[in-house]
Image (cartoon, rainbow, N blue to C red; front, top):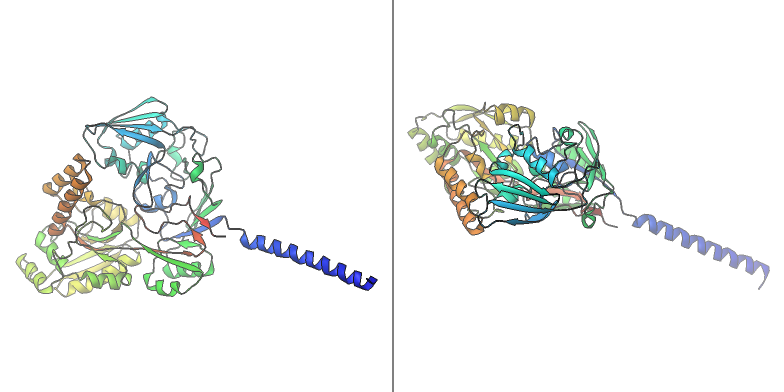
Length: 505
């Protein structure tokens, strides 16, 4: 072999080795999965503690990410153990004994045990409690912690939904040292820790390296919640990659366009979001059942779904979704019928109709639904003025707490919340002892079939009495990067659970 041939051979080998190294290096870069996620939300929470305020956006950031409960609700809507590893319910339904996890610590280092769990429940049920679901704890007569691993709840009467309620964001177990500051600097036991909150922009979480449940530790290192109210801006952020996912995308009319983008996945699932036009049953003319029924008969639900949400949605005839046990399709009880609606208004003393105002939040579904209702009511001689009301702050103060409204419209997100019509006070100002009796019977039994039957009776009462106009259930319009895996397709409870989320290699 000549020196020239040897030189050429060496050069070939050197280049081949270099090329192989570059190929391996390049493959390594290509296969390295991302460990951060930017998730978009339309509504920014006013605080970050779900145990002191009601807006669902709080839980959508913090529940199962920062905060955990004795039990949890999984992606299929089933109750699963969490900080309680097991439980036993006495034969009479009055004593719940929980065996707790050991070795659990809050993000600030405080140890979780029965004493801490007891303090959290006492805080939720106490006289000074501001828990948004304080009623969930109303039948707990006493809380005992006989040892560090045992928590005992003694009830004043059987409460068939108690375990389910204990899985809610409002039932999160908070630490004794950190509870007072959770609104702005939340501390929990979950797979993510709070890092920062730039109000008006984003909340940042980081992986909890000391998470107690190694089998369910977060796969992401960081998660950022970005708040983008405008649907066009949401779509632009998804297309540009500034946002990786919008689990509740706010512009159904843009879904068809987004489905054409190969970089994105569009996943349409179910939710508990019941779009309801609530009426002030204590204010004329809505205190007259005939007026409420006439307004319901003036509503073409199919037209509302098409016009408000581009055909995405399921019409409902009561405050209940097809996902829930005992669902009954009651859309035919006061079906769309303009002539019957006019006749009923005349019978009620309003032959020429009347004028009222709807306080509608700024969200698109509420604005669009209101505009369609306005046109439909005009067909029976009723004039409805639309007043845009900022949500959540103004709506909560004026409507939810103040009760100062004629009609409003909002998507009720809480699962199985038909019992809101039995609450006193509640913003509908609806009172029906017969309905209350049915709901009481639901809690008196733990038999699933009997509960489903009773829920059917409750739905029927509301469909006939019409304390609110029942419009449709919104679907979950999820749009995210096609390489993102593990987000929930359905929403059995308002949430963005991130511990299983990861990027595909």
